[in-house]
Image (cartoon, rainbow, N blue to C red; front, top):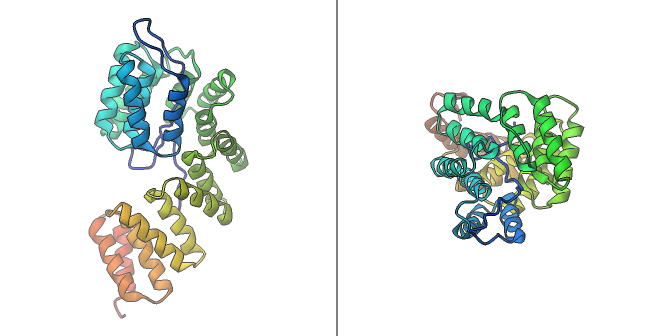
Length: 322
């Protein structure tokens, strides 16, 4: 089943999203100010999942402005999405030294620590972050994410609303507000918020992913497929989205399309027990049992004690007479 993604992906095995934030630059008189269009280009690249391009661009900015805490935070967010939690933590720590009591740096550090399995330190830092003063749209967004992490979604939504008062054209605030209401109210509200984020940036992959997951959850498979397909257009190497679209195709008994999606996901991410498991199921639907058996075996090998491995064993048992 496709799962609704949370507010930071990159910190936790592709399940959580940390959004690129729009921020107010702290301009030092000792350095040249950065052109606002340069920062917009970084954010646009980040939202369209072009992480390497975003990282290259932010490196160029930081080369001119090494003591800009917000630019350093953006660098950390990009590194986190590229699954380099150690490098992300280093960037957030540098930002924290530049700007004391910075909400954004604190939240970024907390997520990076969580990704590094330092859960107690992560939670403590999140609790510290919610007590910090927010003054910019980026601050309110970051503090709202901390509230969401701690399960205080009413306060999270209040902070996202404050962010939108300061910057009504803030796609990340709409995205995260949508995430915070997705499990608690009519999904229509969250879907509308994701749609607003998409209207502001038609290449905002995270917004399509989350809206697609909600459509899938409510049984609207056609809209879910459309959103996942748009994500794959934006980023053909998004293994999780390929997998989630494949799951829908299996449910619709569109086995050839499901197999193609699972195969593409496995090519990007070879250790992916769930994709092997579901490709095996798709093979059984078209009586390709020998191929199904091989995939069930790989699922068991990759996840011997987990749910995919256990279901793989059940699949092998089912096919033992074939």
